[in-house]
Length: 473
Image (cartoon, rainbow, N blue to C red; front, side, top):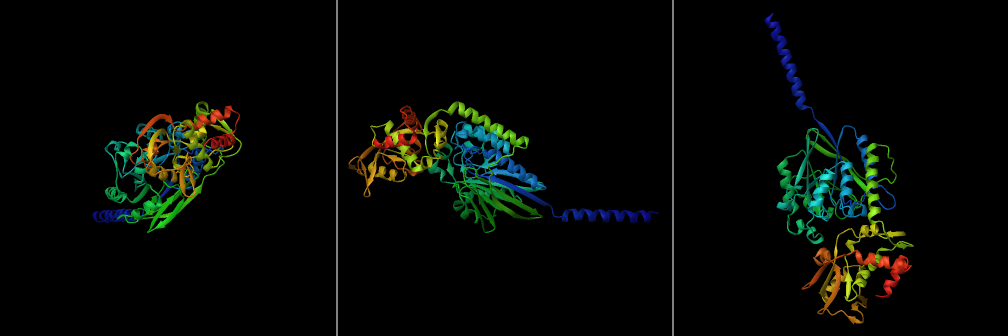
């Protein structure tokens, strides 16, 4: 009898061991769907009625529905807020609320994230319920806001997301954290973050263009599976040295989707594409309706507070004319000065036909810059005007030489100019060698807004107002 039970015991033990061994040998398969946007700049709604925020929600809702047994992660490449009036007027709060409803988990730190100040960024991050990442901004003050990288799980699969920002921020942003902190090289900070976590899958989210991030990313000792890029607003899908690089165009015309499959210790990208955003919305789900209702709430508030009509535009105003109109309205407001100029990068929208409102000016010039009165050497004046495209006034080029009035600009002479504080502080590489300047409390939008209001009172439309201004210059 004892031998009989002993035999049954051995059968049970060996059968159990076989099951345990099979359990450890069986490959676990994980499917991860990454949904990505970059350089959104507040474009949840366009003035032609395109509810981009709603369209994105509905398309992502469908993506998740169609991806069986997927772990879905939504992320951004940064530059979330500054741009459209509906985002800028509310200092990014509207965009943050929509990003929260869309389910973003994390975002790279973009060069425009601090445009409304550090506290506003903290508020927006909290509203969006989103973690900001940046491994190479070396700043003690930002430790409570930024992580070098963060880990998310898809089942048992450990995924590390690590981020870096372009060192160009030292030239294009006047935000205190960038000015007073050090931007380390990503090739030194990203590997440390990757080595620390020992994740199954490494993903880099860089607020850098592919041209910037590509060289250092392919040389990393532990190569990431995917590098999401951004910043230059160009669409790209490229494979280099076994790494997928992918990026959307700016202002939310599309999103990127990357499908990853992990089986055992092997991970691979099985699908990657850029998906154009639909214009039509269905509003069939409760979530979709909530997104639209939230956007409409902000649009109503915007119309009440910034919906004042400035002038009527019979037809659209092309960008070169808009740049000239802006610069010359500054010089008209300060006629005792010799010239005025601005940076082309400050123009973020165009003027379309119809009523031109205060909110439209906010969309064109979303940054909170102020007028600066300054002196500048003639040599620097020529340099600054030549990189302003058409956004200058008071100077004329004749046969390769620059003139103010009838006199050629003397490189050694001092001239009085009007510009913005962003440019005067060194933004976009403008030069003010030995210059003296005073920052006023006048918004850089005010001269243009005042000129358009005055012109409208005279019965002029935008085209005639522009022509009259040019006659006086």
